[in-house]
Amino acid sequence: MARESTRNMSTTLDGGNSIEPVTAAPFCSGPEPQWFAAYTCANHEKRVAGQLADRAIPCYLPLYESLRRWKDRRKRIERPLFPGYVFVQISARDRLRIVQLPSVVRLISFGQGPVAVPEEDITTIRLCLEKKWRMEPHPFLKTGQRVRVAHGALEGAEGILVRKKGMFRLVLSVGLIMRSVAVEIDSSDVEPIQLTRPFSKPRNCRDARCG
Image (cartoon, rainbow, N blue to C red):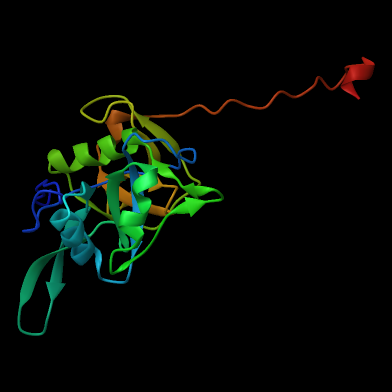
């Protein structure tokens, strides 16, 4: 698997891979710090992370290693795993400190205000990087064979199983920002999630309540 290193962008900016998972949580207005997604100007993710670090605001910038090819050379570079987004840990009442920063467009919000990123999502993707598993952006998926990891460090994590070039990958979707990432996984470590079928009335039911 490709080399991955994990580093919190709130404490260092000299490279290092970091990650955040996401599914929308309810609107938050309380004083306790939570994770939020800051939408940045194009290609300004590292600049925003630097501005946040300079202000001692906890942030997390997901990075992955990519091979860049030129005519005369090749070079491995680090790119944002979720292009256009940096994750910040603040209380909702401090959101103005974020949106007033240069290169920050807005915090991802619905209706009343910013929507928090669930902590468990962040934990899952962080774990993938800490284990140095190969991760990369993946087209956003909402449908497909949903599976649950039954064994290993990711036990309990859920996602969509896909196959590419003979390798199985678990696609973790970030619903809040409509982005997905894929991590390579052994197909024997996952099990299908059995969806509960909606109740259907018996065909021969004569009770008036059956309509």
